[in-house]
Image 1 (cartoon, one colour):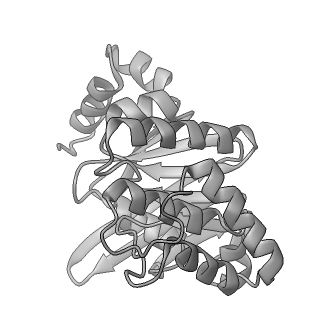
Image 2: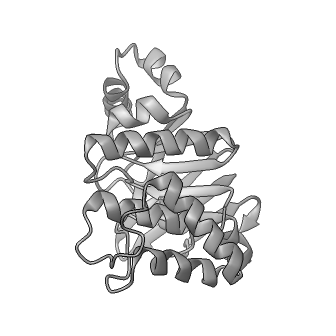
Image 3: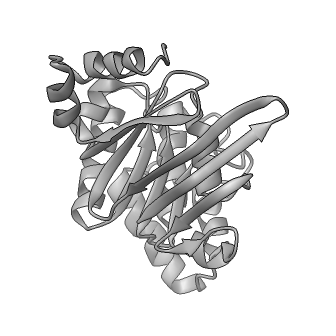
Length: 243
């Protein structure tokens, strides 16, 4: 479970996040939506410990990520918006490096990488250098890196950005399978079709605050909208946080 409790973050005169609270639960996919500049990425960065909040708490399975960083990160896998792979390492070496950082022993780490390469379709590129990979290949390697230590919680910042149709379908199937294993998945996206197809719950952020937190069908029902996109726009308009 991933929890935001009263998170606030200011950059100079800009209040990027103000009193954001929500919970992403185990066995569910939670979507974080909002227009550009709404505070989504800042919120995610506080949840996985890259940014420290000015106020509030970010917790993973009840562990405050500021107070017990190592314990919280051991339970968390992260796919940041910029994959951040090491260009001169192979896909295998990128994943192995992060596994080693999590304290995994060589033999079980090797078996885990082989299993991930099989499930993510990395077999043909696993021993190639990352430099020159397509966006879809980079995302797959970054996902393997996030999953290498078998975390119960995942944070994905716009994971489908730049992917082709087949890669998106593959990622969708993977996320559903991970959810069905009981994992907690929190991801941000601008692609409403993906959110509508995948998410059990949607949190909408606008101007640094939570505007709505409900299942997609409940959001549509409240606004009388025919689609999640229309419901999303209706929430922004009703709360004075236009896109």
